[in-house]
Image (cartoon, rainbow, N blue to C red; front, side, top):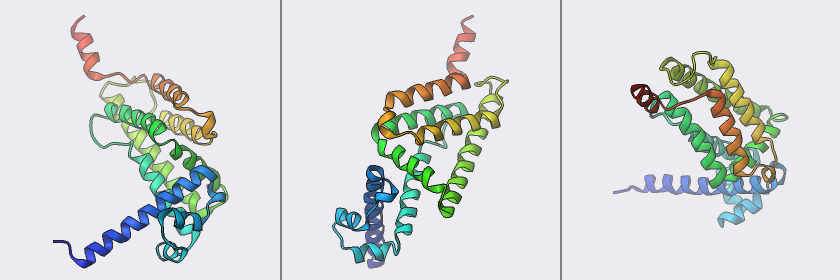
Length: 208
């Protein structure tokens, strides 16, 4: 049986999440500069005082949006499967997000632009980039060592190329980047990696 404290905590988290998601949609549509807390509160059906109870300042709300956007992006970095499978899952996840959540790319682009003049957001972006780059570097190195990537691939440099390319994608206006264009970008990166399915490769060798 759920106690009153647990119920209160669940209600608080539900309301916080709803406010963050409403702000996320506002930023996707109008940018960080167009974010209006009253409109966010109205979208969730609460008054501005209630919003300020959960997020005392606009910056607190923006940080909540940043955390939500980062969690959506990081959801593509699965912890299951072989290193090569995880790399492919990352690219598949980005393709899926471009089709199902195009607003994420608009918010990420806004985040990158705003971080150039917001020190606290710049630190969040720096930590995220380090995590992303480090994860890709480790996966590329492991996939190379298991034989599913070419031995000539340098993990640190290749991870940097992937991060830099996709960060450039975020900064493009959403309307100029339909999912098909992201598909082309990701396909080029996959060709650059030369990733191949280990099972298929083994089967091909056995048939020679």
